[in-house]
Length: 264
Image 1 (cartoon, helix red, strand yellow):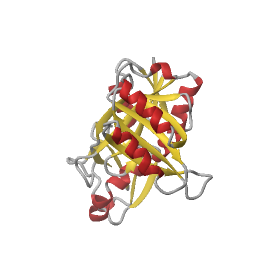
Image 2: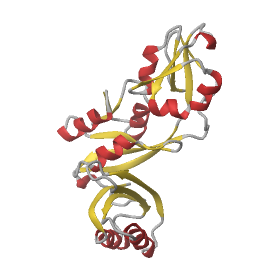
Image 3: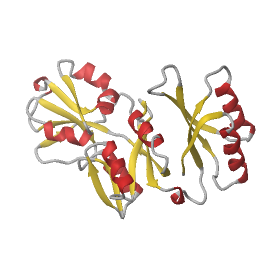
């Protein structure tokens, strides 16, 4: 079995992939889109994708990638604690640092620390936190996970994230509806509604009327239709239960477009 995820080695995505599929071979990819491509072509059996961070919200690229593929389904979830550390070359002083590199999300999650401690440093984005490790030198620091180890590189003793209780929600995605679990605790869907007053309210009331607890709702602009949105909705429920099946049938009647994204 092979699991695709964002690399390089040491990325949070690799850590999540190993926790989700401990016995799987890991295929490290340059981008999230590459990981999804490997899954779609059959070169990987599954992909581990971050879908939401507790500080910065949805990972928008992966929301788009998931909803754009009719045959991909999330089948398992993982809530991964995020522990960001400043990585510097041994012997480097903070006053020597003129550049800080890391993934855009990590830099955003450490913005207060960077403003307060390294106001002189320019922030540059890398494709992953782990990639920033290769940029570390006497004037460039990285932001990496606390699990990272590298010769000649020293990590800060404490988590530098603005919010110490920081978590990322990962989904394990597989190709084919047959991979959905027989029983689930959550159901995830996306919906496009008619552009008229009350349509979102009607959809949410529909879920509530079946006694299902909403756990997430997020909107994304529809790229080629200005002013209209796609809603990503997660609620608690067993996909095998009659009440959930009836609820999904009812939700479909309120949607111009509907897609089941997964159940886990």
